[in-house]
Length: 152
Image (cartoon, rainbow, N blue to C red; front, side, top):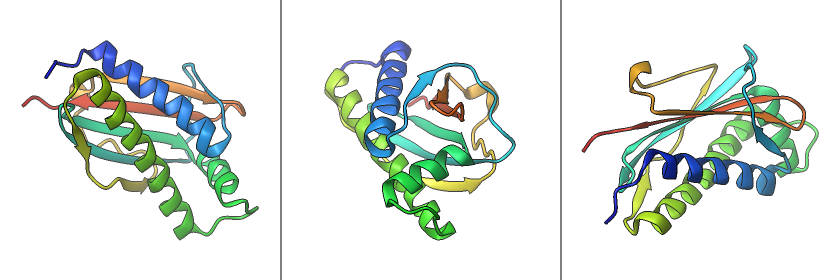
């Protein structure tokens, strides 16, 4: 088993986030510092295995609603369906991240069922954050992927 570097983790997180958002929601993301609006949602989970850490996605609600509309092919999205869809979107991203990390470390990781919150929710200590990737969508909506490694 090889130890994952911070750069390797960041590269996998970024590639998966951009690729899967385009594939699932038809939304292009680019890495760019942008301000998140005050109307946002958070999904997060923890990983165990070769990658032990927390992964948090804070995103403008408009971005996530647009993604949900695209996936559901509906103009309006029920709040319960919205939450389920956002968790499933993050679930797919986490699955692809686990697969990407396995390809470079040859050691498996697994993750817990994602949790959803309206608003910004950071369940980890700010000083424990190892990486933040900021995104802007093709409609200038903000998203932020935050990760923290947990020592063994």
